[in-house]
Length: 115
View 1 (cartoon, rainbow, N blue to C red):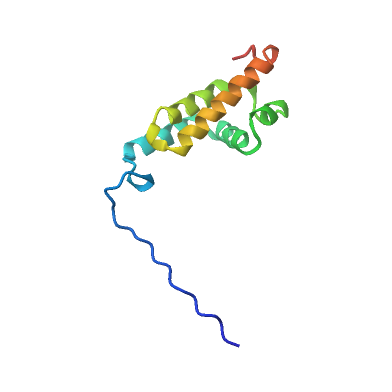
View 2 (cartoon, one colour):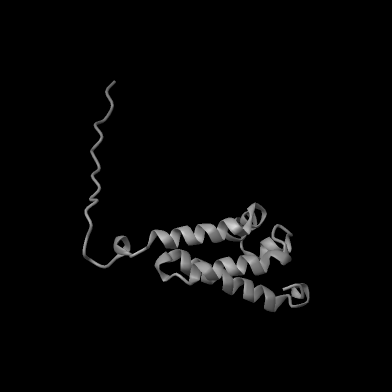
């Protein structure tokens, strides 16, 4: 029995002058800065950010997987992501998450007296 021949996939790694996804002027200092912000959240809050992204804001908060007292820290981090438009989709996702948190806060104002 012989295995079928696999075709070689070549990826063009040349730098293009065309504006687009691969020519975004993301700076290493931007990456370091957001990494520091994420690191400053601490492990417990980092896990809660991940939970919000995985299951959604309302479910994460209503099930207690995300604590109300960490929401200001999460919002700060998400705002930092939004502040850098060069983060592309990540900035849009952070903005959407902030909007969902605001909707939750509007829907459950009594629960959010700690914010």
